[in-house]
Image 1 (cartoon, rainbow, N blue to C red):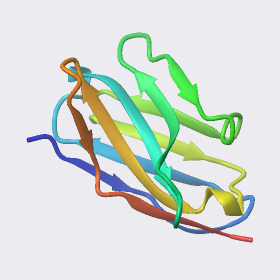
Image 2: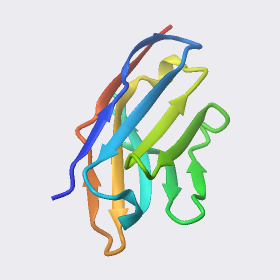
Image 3: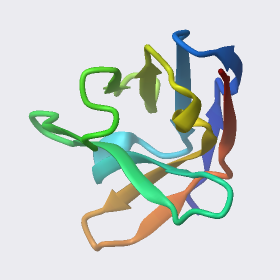
Image 4: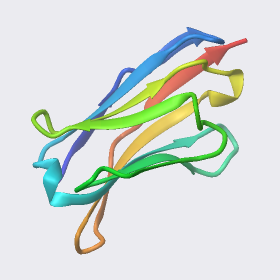
Length: 117
């Protein structure tokens, strides 16, 4: 059983920063893709950013490009999302997901990010 534990969410003023962490119970080198998603109230869950194993290529949604940075620390089995210049519209529950080579997906429980305007 793979478990993901997110942390780092909270309340921040617009323009501020937060760093989310997602610690995985298995070696993250076992997973081809790791990513962050978010879901605002009344909205569908949307992709925020992904990072692949190997060379670590990244992808960002247009709405966060230039403000958010996804990274990973293989020694800690942790994926990070550094969020800068936060906006009110970034308010959401943020979820971490990992995908293994068989296409199995594992999700964390989510962490709330609230940006006050």
